[in-house]
Length: 344
Image 1 (cartoon, rainbow, N blue to C red):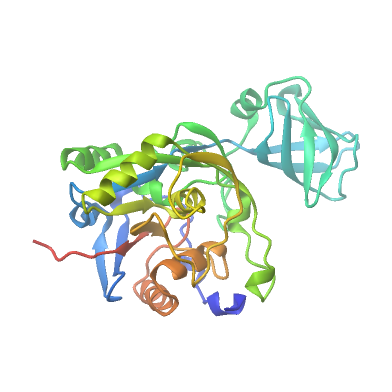
Image 2 (image 1 turned 90 degrees about the vertical axis):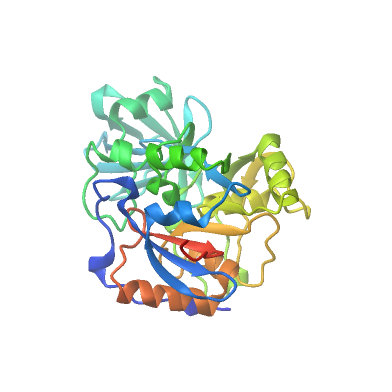
């Protein structure tokens, strides 16, 4: 398939600029993976789609306040978006400035902090923070890295709302957005119903928002993201399958983590960088159902959900979502792909 096959027109007013007052107040488009049947529900109805045999797999990555603003010592404005923290003093980052900074350039940041450009790595820059622990510096002066399609500046509410309630492993520069719909009340309902939960970690990078730039998908160079799948999660998946339950991934990032750990043909504990690019024709090994948000045109994530539920059914579901004025992208509504059970 070609990149252009995954294009669609989205009216700008359907791009959610702010979260709803309540996390679980989103709508939920349900599409039965077997039949392609579409049902419109509320996110709170998600509890009716799962039972005690099932396993929900969440991504516990934590978004870091990765955007920094500063100036070159010549006075030019600079915007830094940390892509990956290498250690306490070094990071890889996007740097936006009127002229691309050279090695040795000093960038002055807020509160008398600074960083030094050490060199380039393709489109990214290696930065050194010689006087402060990067995590501590970001907590002091960093801004939440809202996606480029959110056109407003971040505010204090984004510190909590662009973060899942179960976030614990710092390292992402974008939220695992399917998890944003879960509040503590929903997590409590899941536990009370006897549904099992497990966690993986995948530190979402800014590349998740980048459209594919080549028409031939086989030529696309996938961005790398760190993932980790623990032995306890592997055991939980195995037990779920043995009991006849479904493994339900909460978000495409949980899917990528599980499938990256299944490249041998079976799910195994592991960690490292993944550049797994899932397109139609891919055979899923560890995921039976998925909760996700709506994704950008021509994005790798739209290709992933098309691989999971079928290209034609997904594009039909997206047309339905647009016709019914669903809210799109990070702060938007949710979509369930799996067995859509009738209401009892």
